[in-house]
Image 1 (tube, one colour):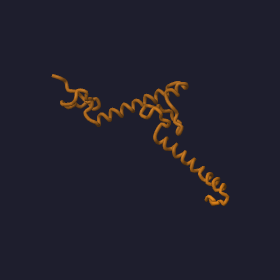
Image 2: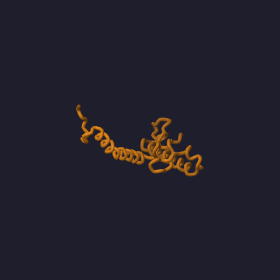
Image 3: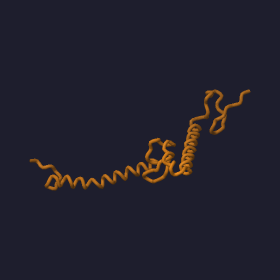
Image 4: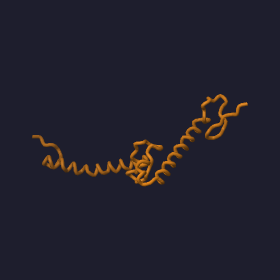
Amino acid sequence: MATSRRCWQCDRPLRVTARTDMRYCGTACRAKARRRRLRWKKEFAAEMIATSMAHLQDRVGRRCPSCGVWFAPGVGIRRDARYCSPRCRTAAWRARQHASSAAQPLRQAVTSSRTGDGSGAPTSG
């Protein structure tokens, strides 16, 4: 008699009619296993960054320009990521927007001084 196959995540028996390559009993177990793998990869990458020598840190990880934390691009996030999290990316975007809005009144003052009347409206002539 054949032994029943079991779910790799929860260890419950799989259905008798399940495909031969089925590993998980359902989508919840599959998602939980994926999250566990990603968490393990992040922890492993963080450990590699922490234990690697200073001259290897640029190859293993990258420093977030917003918060200064070392992170491993390609582990749970894009390989070309500049920021460690969406929170830092948003904070940097808001800082850029704030800097550009602070320069906006200066631009308006320069354009109004060019027209000559101070109103900022173009003169017809």
